[in-house]
Amino acid sequence: MTHRLWTWLFIALLALAWPLLSPFSVTLLNYIGLYSLVAVGLVMLTGVGGITSFGQAAFVGLGAYATAWICTSPVAAQALAGIHGDLLPWLGLVLGLIVTGVIAWILGAVTLPLSGHFLALGTLAWGLSLYYLFGNIEGLGGFTGIAGVRPLAIAGYELTSPRLFGIIIWAVLLLSIWAMHNLLDSREGRAIRALKSGRVMAESMGVDTSRQRMKLFLLAALLAAISGWLYTHLQRFVNPTPFSLEIGIEYLFMAVVGGSGHLWGAVLGATLITLLKEQLQDWLPTLLGTSGNFEIIVFGLLMVLILQRAADGIWPLITARAQRWVKPVAPRTAHTTQAVLARRKLPPVGQVVLSATQVTKRFAGLVANDAVDLDVKAGEVHALIGPNGAGKSTFFNMISGVDDPTSGTVTLLGQAMVGKPSRAFAALGMGRTFQHVRLLGQRTVLENVALGAHLRGHRGWLSAMLQTDRREEAALLAEARKQIERCGLIDYVDTPAASLPLGQQRIVEIARALAGQPSILLLDEPAAGLRHLEKQALVRLLSQLRAEGLAVLVVEHDMEFVMNLADRVTVLEFGRVIALGSPAQVQANPRVMEAYLGVEDTEGVAA
Ligand code: ADP
Ligand code: MG
Image 1 (cartoon, rainbow, N blue to C red):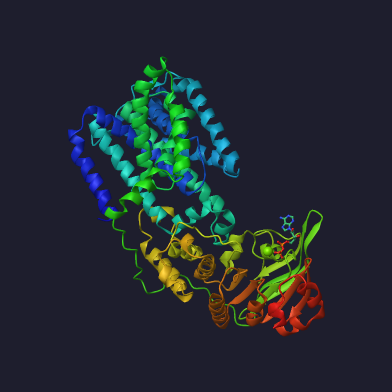
Image 2: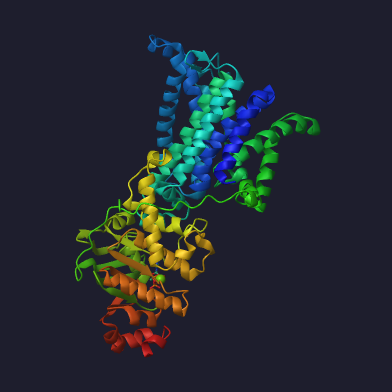
């Protein structure tokens, strides 16, 4: 059975059992459904996107209070006098989403630029503040809360029974999981996954990481708000308690314990934590002789234990065990042969694609690049060499938008680029690789390479969630497959990138850069870690790219590799250009001999 069939089986079992379950089980499952919805948002935000939030309960509260207020407040009643009562909960949903959206946007704008621990601390702060806000607003019933909220009504029928209402809860949950699954399995999903592995890589692929982070944050907040809305109409009563920081931490437990990167892990985590809390609340007070929320201590210990034993949560453990019974879904083969992807016109051979003029970079007292001039033409391989610490990597950053020069200009295809982010370089047709390979290790080679084609697609989040992007997605995957084939890695197309040897991972990075159909390719030490035959294959590949009219800049240590390949060589020492010319000219240059040969291995040059 495939994954999908198992899912349908689960849904069918749930549906069949639903009328037969005891009222207690239905209530439990309803809560599990509500918690799962929040945890699904957290899986996206924390597990996939790498943004930890302790404050999700506050967004649940916003969704819950918005609808409670609209349904009960005299002020709202006056303003909405002509409106049928059955519509109020739906207006409550809209209001909840708007309020949550606006507040999350403001909180996100303040917290998301923070990094790592500070971001998590920020979410603690607003999680706490919103809780006290709920309790202290007169119009929201203070800490006593709001009672007598009207039930949800569909076509005039009031859903007062938990059994009926549970159908809505689980339908919303399953639809959300479906939509999130689709989102992750798309162009935008690859961009979201890329966020976690460092923003430099994602930006170089053309991903606007700040924007993606904000969208992810809003998405998780809105899912939480929907959960809050459902909660209010199930419970028909709200007070601040379920939206406290403590519950916010529990939501994070659910996402992490279940499996922080897996959507179904959210459901598993919510189930485990809910059942455990149930049990613990029964016997912990008896055991300890006093009452209190002791379960949070047990959860804390449990989380530490699970994180030690299985950092990715329990879900991956189960799927690993169950592999025998789950047939992998056949990888989506791309049928589309017509190119629906935009193709860029390459500049004519000989034209300068990239030029750096008098680029200087100072780090405090140190001049890492001192008035460096360098240009790369279409149809040539230009090599930048120099001993360790000469300033090659610094220069690479200057000409790829990772960092800005202290002075000097960088021009890409006629456009002044200083001050622009890497994604602007990518948009103009710059593809690059990294000295320290930056791939999504758990994802397949195909997905990694498809990320390189990010800017050639245009479909957004909603389109991905609703699967209206399938044609474009097929074309992107077909393009990725083509580049993988061209680079000789077609046998590994469905292999997780991390399980390839380093040399091949470097080639995956080249394929990823090629998927963006670049006019210029920047390679940072592409031959490092490659075996002799692999180097020869790389030389052939780069020669072929040059023949196709690409401009290639290679930063390299391997002299033999460079001398065999390059048309022109620039030599850097102490941040200055000390020679520029053909490989033969550079090798004969006494200045280069003196500066370079003592430091680096001389084999290649001597030959
Ligand atoms: P290469 O790549 O040629 O080995 P780098 O560009 O990495 O050389 O480094 C050039 C010089 O600049 C080195 O002396 C290095 O220590 C210094 N340097 C590089 N990056 C920084 C930085 N962010 N802050 C301070 N000094 C730096
Ligand atoms: Mg370097």
